[in-house]
Image (cartoon, rainbow, N blue to C red; front, side, top):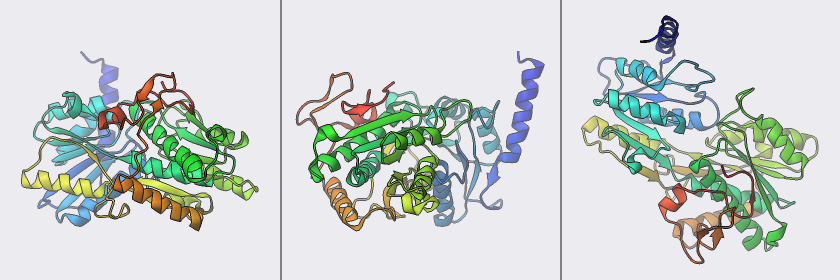
Length: 395
């Protein structure tokens, strides 16, 4: 039995979310598809959650009669007492036929909600319930192959660094964040050694984790202070792996003080606008094309459960209509390095270059990939540690 106090808290929380579920546009009873979106951060964070929000707006633009309703800042710090099933109940009451949850932390709640609403289709971003067999029939998983984008970002950092000291601002530690940090390292190391011809022993790559996807005062490490420490200890390029732009903002401030430092934000195509002079580029997600494909399948009854790991469109990685992953070169990237980046992207796309090729060892010295061995999707997805050559915690 629920205690009266607990019941009161949950009732208040539910009443609160009824006010929070925001329609992106006003609709009518003739809506062809109402889809709901649960965003872990603010919908205008210039990062991860905004990329998803813009993907939802793309669906509304491309599919007449579709309408998005969303709730942002769905996390324990911003919405204490709020559970994923409670939020989903509200979205379903408002007519949602498709619901997207955009954070790994929502995994258990999305699975529970999908079980409670078998008539509704669910997409859990970055999850693997379909792979592990734990997903109910109405739940699919979707993720973009950001490993390519991070290799591009790392390559850009390795081309630009004067000191050979590149840093990575990480969120919490899990398989996703490890593999993205590793992809960044592999790209940066390739630029430093194979392209610039500099000694591997002169290259340093440090990872510091703040504990969550964005700053929560009193809970996480302060990302601004972490980045400040990077710059103060000789790291001159910082790659961000968190949802917000502290690394870029601080790099811009340090440049104004005379320091030759740079940053690469993450997630959202428009991130460089916060501080263009310090921005070497941004690897970003373009959720719109996959969201349109999924929404169409719900509308026409062809939806099937799937685990999807979407590639860039190598014909044009920055195509808004076809590429799940892009890289927007920043104003601070030199013309020479932009040309080198274009060649690197072409080599990745053609398969001529695969940086997930052995020999590669884990941090503890155990073998990740033998000489000449190319990593399988599963070996990349379930990466267990950072690699030798990287400084930072793996677990």
